[in-house]
Image (cartoon, rainbow, N blue to C red):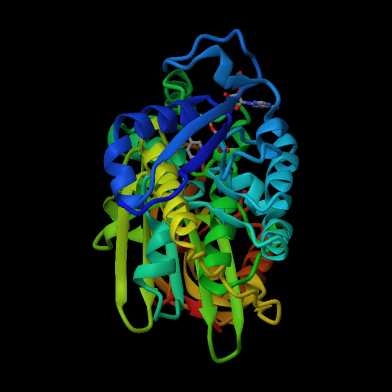
Length: 438
Ligand SMILES: NC(=O)c1ccc[n+]([C@@H]2O[C@H](COP(=O)([O-])OP(=O)(O)OC[C@H]3O[C@@H](n4cnc5c(N)ncnc54)[C@H](OP(=O)(O)O)[C@@H]3O)[C@@H](O)[C@H]2O)c1
């Protein structure tokens, strides 16, 4: 083994992920050291409460309630930021980078909100950030994009990046139960974040989408420029309609790039995925990402997107890379910033749609709806209709052929003004390989 003073590791945060990292770094120490070509030691860990019972053995002396003291400790080479949040975690990460340390983080919210500043600071200070665990837990997607697929350009990336939503949608579909019932179960199982909006309204998936966009395209997309919707409005009926039409509904992250125009688009929205696509069959808490590279074609990555061990596995892979790089003096290249890349407007995306309408149950209504859509250049693919249990009204479900989001939105605005419609049309996108930037 190459002679090196040894890598000193500090953990800021010793909760679910931190304890997994501590445990597995210790249990596989000699194997990992052989891989790194140097030794490592777990120096200290910062927590909020020094009194809390932990599931791992750690000496009192190794614990501190001052995370900043680890970031400023000249002995520590690698700081694992596993506290979460964008407040103190940001300050601690900045301090570590200012001190030229390598930071390994699982914190997608931190990177989404402050990634641009943190990566610029890292560059200035000759420090480094590793972030495999921040996207899709145990799936090594960052490494795949950064290393395995390095020769490729990526016109299309889409994925299921929130296990909680996938769990809820899967159980609604399999058991025919309503959203609220399954959500209650998910809460009891501890699958839902304390701030439920992060999961249910798409924000957690959006944080991860922003990170993947940066990695694949070198651009930090501001959250406010991304369409982000969650799954609260998806009904059991939508799931059943979708099934009849040959689709499953998933909360989908989408990243589209038009290389000719230099445009980039990202969104998080519930979408209909054709049943013959791999992602349609990724169920429960699992995550999956489909990456289309211009040279390699499509590759799909599936695995556990969260949980102590899956996330620790990703953090440790970064720790080993960081240790190897420090020991051998070869530091990684960060993605090149592409500030010149323009963001496409949502209206510029072309795809097919699913529309659910509650309409008056009388002759001529379908023809009226079809004529409004045709006026905007939207052509209908399929039509399903059934009574909805309310006297004089029916539910109508349509799918369209490929059209622009702009045309679809114009049609929806017009439909909204029609007396035959009993409430606002509900729209879902169809995610297939035809979707593209116009
Ligand atoms: N859990 C997952 O499955 C998962 C998956 C992927 C990514 N992540 C990310 O990993 C990070 C950690 O998640 P987690 O689930 O492990 O969270 P957690 O269980 O809540 O653990 C957070 C840890 O940070 C400590 N901490 C919080 N604020 C602190 C402060 N101001 N000073 C010192 N210590 C502080 C806590 O101390 P106490 O223990 O004393 O409270 C705790 O040990 C988050 O960014 C999360 O988004 C988690």
